[in-house]
Amino acid sequence: MHQALALNFHSNHVLQRSLPTFNLSFNMATLFRITALLATLASTVIAAPTPGVGAGFISNVTPGAHQTGGDEYVVIFNNSQATTPHVAEVLSRIQLNVEHSDVRWTFNNSAFRGFAANMKSHCIDALNAMEDVAHVEKAIEISSYDTRSGATWGTQRISSSSAVQGSATDLDFTYNFEGADGTQGQGVDIYVVDTGVRVTHGVFGGRATQGFSADKSDNTDGDGHGTHTAGTAAGAVFGVASGANIIAVKVLNDQGTGPLSDSVAGIDWVVDQHNQRKTQPGFVGSIMSMSWGVGSVSSSVDSVIKAASAAGIHISVAAGNSGADACDSSPSDNGGPNSAVVSVGSIDIDDGISTFSNTGKCTDIYAPGKDVISAWNTADNVINTLSGTSMACPHVTGVMAYMMARDAKLAADPAALKSALLSAGLKGALAGNTQAGDQKILVSNGETGTVKKSKRTVTSNIATWAKELVKTTEIKRGNLKFALKSRKASLRY
Image 1 (cartoon, rainbow, N blue to C red):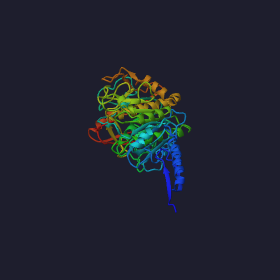
Image 2 (cartoon, one colour):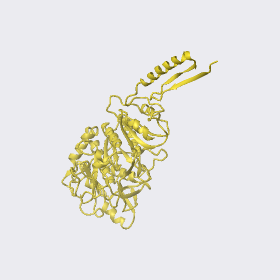
Image 3 (cartoon, helix red, strand yellow):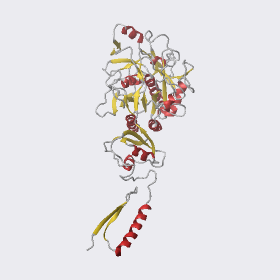
């Protein structure tokens, strides 16, 4: 009797071809045939083709196979190719799927596709080698731009050709605009991509709604930053476009920070909402207002912002509070002459560029950002004072909404609106040093401050409020009563 030996041949090649099992009896008659068979099989395995870059199959023994854990990365696909891959397809190449616990977000809208997932270095290397993947970036933290102290004066400055004289606490401020109060920006959807919004606050009058929250268990604004910026953009009394809709997009936590991937997920949601809304009656256009920054240039953030802009969404961003070049951080680096995105710097009541404001060729326009009063998150009647390019950005957001509601052609074309916005802006009005290439344009809604027959003026009576603040923290404005949290606050992004 000859002892039988079972042989199973496996290749370590990337395709992991399993060869058939042979039951062979070892005797001299078959030894040479076995040797010849081995040589033939080995040559077959060696000759097996290797998948090209971006091919759809990677086995579980290759360096690209997913292993649980690792840091979070944002992956954005290359949409310049003829066909953009589906998210599930790219995930499968590294043995992931959309239900896996390491996959935090999937982005699958008409403007861009991708995902965010916890991955180790071998997965990152595999993704970087794929031709249909454009960006693979570690999900660093983003933050709102922090704050300082003061009083409201910005709505007068954006609607007057002359400077606001004196201090913010001893003037009556007059906001000039065309049409009835409460109709400015009507039909425009403003997506406040921030810490959330207290949508029940009195200044919103039912025009604010909850939209997206990266924290699926909590959509409230625990920080106040988002509520404040929303109030400046479109709140009654304090806001520019008090007829626009506010949609809360919560991507930052109660400390005003959050992972980069959450902001991309929020933008992904906005693109889908915009596509749904643009076919509905009464819709004018969409604006994303983003008063936060990464602190460095982020290729994935820049990529999705450009894609959202190309999809027809108007975008305003804060220039940042580092007193540096706005081109050195995202998303403010998307400003400048070659983009439809509007990057906003800050000025004070004396038309001086704020010392904290980022400047340069990527800062398109300036708006009131120092000592700004607006809505606050702790109650429906509380207001607060903040400073920063975060406060300047929503002033411009409001003016954009105002212009969009008045001109349908501008509403449908982000590049045309930016051009009109810069053309309407005031030149030569600002003082202060800037980085190279800065045009020093001050935002304006096109009004001169002189009341004309076809226009109306709303007086906010800030001087009366300011005098009351010396004695009390309660302020009345028409049928609304507000409690001032503080006349002083920290600087916000």
